[in-house]
Amino acid sequence: MDIPANRQELVAIDLQATLEEAYDKMEQRKISAAYVYRITHNKEERIYGIITRDMITDQYIFSKTQVG
Image 1 (cartoon, helix red, strand yellow):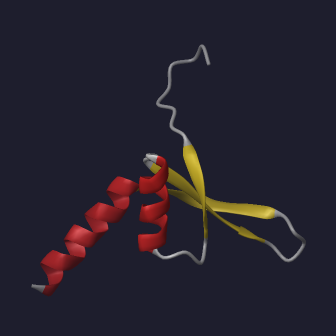
Image 2 (cartoon, one colour):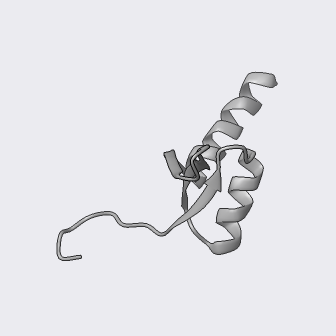
Image 3 (cartoon, one colour):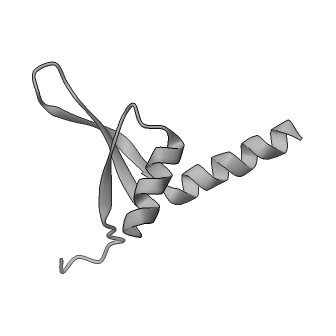
């Protein structure tokens, strides 16, 4: 913890979750980021990446501008 860094609490989001589910889970816990995972066939947790609330809202705003 002595090394300067941008540390954030994370919540776990299943790979099959929707963006809405991910956003809601982050919002409920007042957390701004989540790691995306799935359980493999041999019962290991594999992490696929990180998603933030900003990434979700930016995508939503971008999609809305493309539609109309």
